[in-house]
Length: 152
Ligand code: TYD
Image (tube, rainbow, N blue to C red; front, side):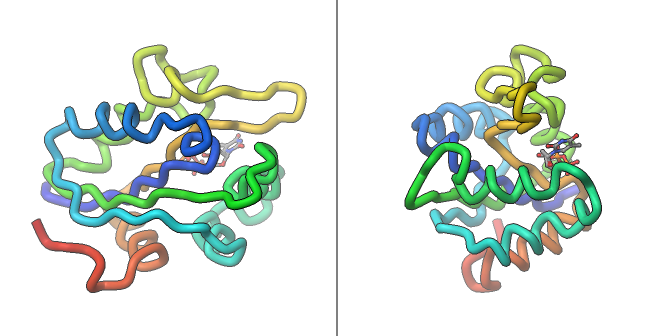
């Protein structure tokens, strides 16, 4: 089924300058990029994005990570993409690998570029992707204005 998927390149990935490597992996999936922009996400946007983590012990560390706090990135940035195509969510999440890079297969994006800080219990997994077509629509509405997303 043709669907859309939000992808976020997280602040540490921008700092490491691996955006091109991540997008290279994603482009092999033969989906269409229908929106892209760089932004310094507000804490409010990040908390809305991760609303489903309410009550989880790792919510605060996840918000700090997305704000660039752990990497001491003063002007933290995120690049947001919308990919569109057949089974976009499944294809992208398979390419990403498991949430915790320690559990992600080595040839996946998170397995290749992410890391898990066991001491601080912070998951640096470099990239986000929507976990369903339905959630993708909710997330895209948070990160993009309607006119910013093309219909491929
Ligand atoms: P989640 O939506 O469950 O995973 P995914 O990003 O793979 O869709 O979790 C959102 C983020 O929360 C995840 O990218 C990293 C963080 N997180 C932890 O720090 N510890 C955990 O045990 C889990 C499940 C998530």
